[in-house]
Amino acid sequence: MSGILMMVIAIVVLGGAYLLYGRYLEKKWGIDPNAKTPAYEMEDGVDYVPADTNVVFGHQFASIAGAGPINGPIQAALFGWLPVMLWILIGGVFFGAVQDFASMYASVKNKGRTIGYIIEEYIGKMGKKLFLLFCWLFCILVVAAFADVVAGTFNGFTANEAGEFMKVTANGAVATTSMLFIIEAVALGMLLKYGKLPKWLNTVIAVAMLVVAVAVGLKFPIFLSRGVWHIIIFLYIMVACVVPVWALLQPRDYLNSYLLVFMIAAAVVGIFVANPACNLEAFSGFHVDGQYLFPILFVTIACGAVSGFHSLVSSGTASKQIKNEKNMLPVSFGAMLMESMLAIIALIAVASFAKGEAAAQGLTTQPQIFAGAIANFLTAAGLPYSLVFTLINLAVSAFALTSLDSVARVGRLSFQEFFMDDDTDEENMSPFLKVVTNKYFATAITLILAYLLAKVGYAEIWPLFGSANQLLSVLALIACAVFLKRTKRQGAMLWIPMVFMMAVTFTALGMTIFKLGNAFITTGLSLGNTLQLIFAVLLLILGVIVAVQGIKKLFERNSGAVKA
Image (cartoon, rainbow, N blue to C red):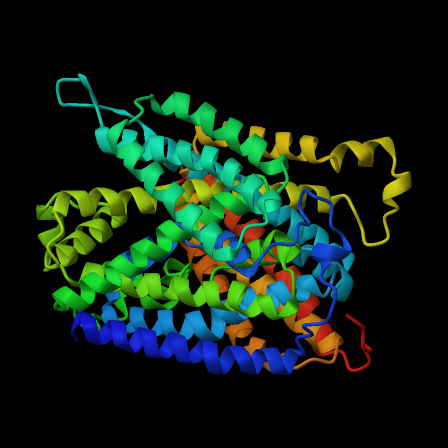
């Protein structure tokens, strides 16, 4: 299959899904364009801030579409292009987009609260406590890992074989551009809030800012060490977690979304110009290089198909910015389908290389393979390879930092909500509750633990990230299915994704526990593998407890309708 044919199929399927299936869900769930959304009802100037659709879309898209939809398909390509493509398209439409839309819809209908509160309201308090604790720990792990990755990307120095330190211009350029994005985001936030300019003019200004940041970054790279960047990044996240979303989060993601959309558009043009051949087998087997297609394919390709983290963004930050219920479809469903498009581009990119060709060109990481392939495509359009390669790498790297501030804010909210119940009197809380629910305290404890984990090492438990992420998807789907049933709305479309992802997650965790448990009995385990075994067992227990509670609610006959 040629690259153009893959691209055409993706455009038709994903575009058609938005127009047909997305509108079908709107009708079944009863979207009310005249309803007052939580952004207005609970506006606080910090988390609850109504924003235009394109701004919230920018936040949602930039938060969920980091390197995940690029890394996953390239890693999973060992099974062949056909299962990867099928999972991206089927999973993206019927699993991921439905989950993201349902999570946002349930949140908007419940005062913009997170999935944790949905679980408390419709399943039970114990389920909520377990879910929020898991979310908080998950966010700490992700912040630690992403901060370390970003610091490595910004690291301006590398050592050669002789041990001499040399400057890395590409990393310095990425660092400069990312820092400029932050400064420009603050200026853009002020403009969007107080300028009252036409939307087209805001767009022109945002694009101009984007171009300036990239140009200055390429011209004036910053050279700092990895350790210094660790400190700078965590200080930035500390601020980004507590300032009003309109001042930094919204405009920063708005800027970055244009960068990502430009990258996708350039890649699509390159594919249609170059029409790359597919050098991958259609299907290479169910067991390849010690990996089983089930469940590995469905854990490896999360972003791009279905990712539990998306439900945290949809219900944790984006839902609090929705101006009108009709905006939920393009923001959640639309952003997920756009991410699936990026995943298809990543598949075409890796398929364009013959076996061993990418490594021979010095392209070893997934982002490098992606950037190298897109640069190859666009050279057919007359653009210089080195410039395109640098710009694509710049775009991919910039999004890790974008995801960081979103996941850190979700972690802060999860910590605060853990100590609050639906009936908590916020005006008369105990001194202890006032402290632990304070946004500054919640931010500090979350980021201090993440910083320590980043410095001590998160590699030992990182292999569980895929399973933990998809466990979030299971719990979100269960919560949304129960919400839809209890509010007398059609929720059958969530049942198959829910059951399938439950099988994927529990199988993946079970295989990990069996492998590590067997090694523990026979040869013993290192400290890192012992921690991984303990966390895998705890994740499995957590998933089973919340899943059983949720499924019981789904099959209750006399649960009664709840207004939402």
